[in-house]
Length: 376
Image 1 (cartoon, rainbow, N blue to C red):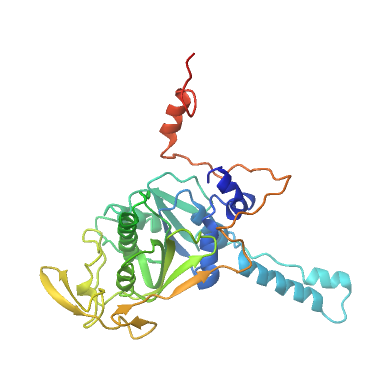
Image 2: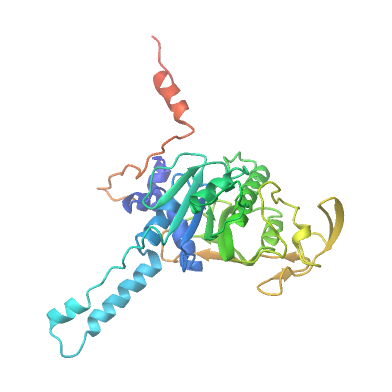
């Protein structure tokens, strides 16, 4: 999180520092959880492209420390208030207060919850989080991940699939944008497929997958391909995500891979490479008839419904539902709120450990500042 004037006017930027989050992106995951109940019944999670660790921080505080936020925290507070107001007939006020006192949930043991965070950049430690510095696009990352999930895993004898699969895979990664939207969207789609390929190796049936996407032309091809693996696919836009940004999040629920499918990063899936996975007559492309290369054969795929359940079709295209997440009374991420006169700017909760601009800052400092040394 920077300290520019625009950041200071951003309500979520200030709230992140006030509430102890490493980045404002923590609110995006919290708002997604409010809408889709992502953390219900979840004990094993993989967080991809995790640096600086705001999403892992949410996982640590929710799953390990049993903290509640947003709507859940409000519902718990209201339930406790009603309980205190109703009380129990015949008891004194002191007895009522003692009985209706909130009992905090006991923290889950480290054996109940397993969270692994992966990124190319180093991540500062978090309670209960196993961090790996690795490239999610490289096949060697899968054995490292499986070893982190299960210490007994032996890469020499085991396959590239988790013996104890995970419930949820998250990916908040994005490339360094160039300003060329078509190029940025393509690179982001490749990053998403890298996360998906890894998720396919570790997700259990019924699991969930959440990843950042860039909305643009022909992005529904990507949605249609994800629909081959998940019963429900929804595009979500949290309120903390700026409306002026093309980013959104693809929420994939109920993992159901096609029959005879075996995930492996040695032969990763990519855009246009899933024709052989679709059931007969299933849609994987946008045109009325599209020639798709599967293995060494060229096959024609007719556009029909991907799955009979939870699909919306318009002509020859499958349209993923779009959902706006977050309370309407929450802050608007595109609005600039006036700061109080006594406002004091706080430092970031966790400064970057190895920012890519660190060398540039050192060179600028050595040169005497932003504009270099002046000579008389």
